[in-house]
Image (cartoon, rainbow, N blue to C red; front, side, top):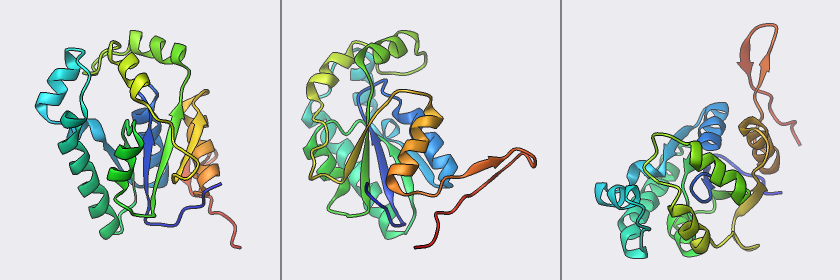
Length: 191
């Protein structure tokens, strides 16, 4: 189990429809960290290509990866913990995004393809159509043992997945005090 020290940047990764944004946003909210959706850093030209169902090439992704790497370096330099939802499909992309920073950890959401296809069939308002799934599955290089990453079988509710991430990374797990109706933080016990 990878134990993290703050400030940390956690990149929730996987193919389109894996649940990156939903899980990432919830994790960031529970930790009180900044959330960034890497899709927002794509150029209008990349968004248009994906909207048309055209897979991006490495050349298309280059400037986007540079923006992500600069963001990660800036977050770490400012001691600002964050969660980034990002496909990060290839090992070379993950190396580029992390930029050699030890406080960057990837969480790969390994979601069954049948579940993703159903999500994409019913998803509205996203520029990446279901046609891109096969190309992303072909491009995906799951994190290797030597990478600073964990892989979670992404089944269950988003909050259950977030609980597993918090547990596996040794993050404090906030919980709700039902009597008071407010969120409180449960700190990990001191060593």
